[in-house]
Image (cartoon, rainbow, N blue to C red; front, side, top):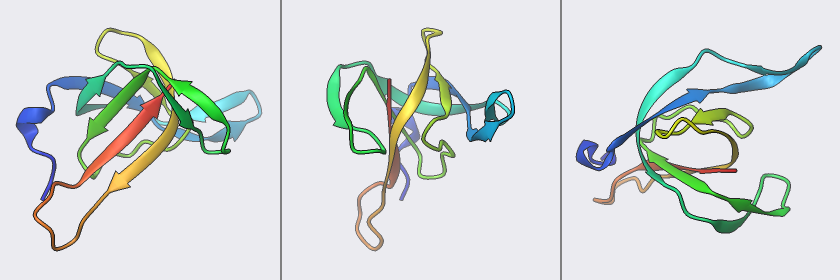
Length: 104
């Protein structure tokens, strides 16, 4: 079961991180995704284990492709980077599957 569509009130644009190139970071084609965005300040641990601050959290369906380091354009036009990504699944249980993205 996926996160209900009626909860996904925002649209974000994801430019997936593909790695480092000769001239800096390389990103894939931008894609729009339905999401629920919460712009709150939270202390989190990033992919390296360092405590950092997230100023926006994006909740989307389980099929969202958004690796750590990707660029995200929020509904207000602000561009931010992905700090952590969590996939929430519960096979066999009647709870929605989702992807949770913490951004700078």
